[in-house]
Length: 110
Image (cartoon, rainbow, N blue to C red; front, side, top):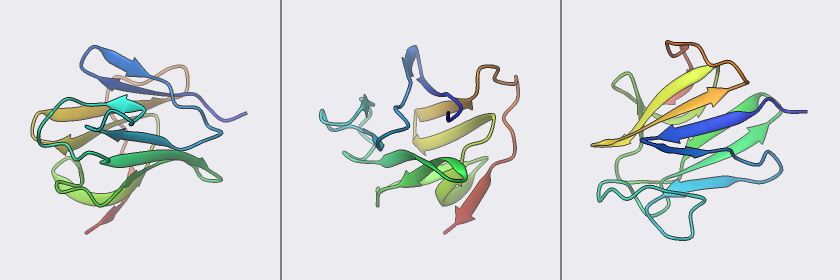
């Protein structure tokens, strides 16, 4: 059974289903809707892979950023803080016990 993933945005919490892709963005058909004009309509996608939970940019205008470094995808480990756009940061926590500080993720720089 895959480890649980919880995505936090402000006061909202979303738990993706590992059996299908989860979309994050401004469009009303996204699984996690973020009401921010700088977030693309279909900004990012979360899927469970053989390597674990993967967060991928979907060709958004602002991409994904971790610690100020732009990336196209990130393998989520423990607790990962990801900036989608100005004023839109999500915290992804894998497993039941998230650490207080984000782990160093694996990512692809663009």
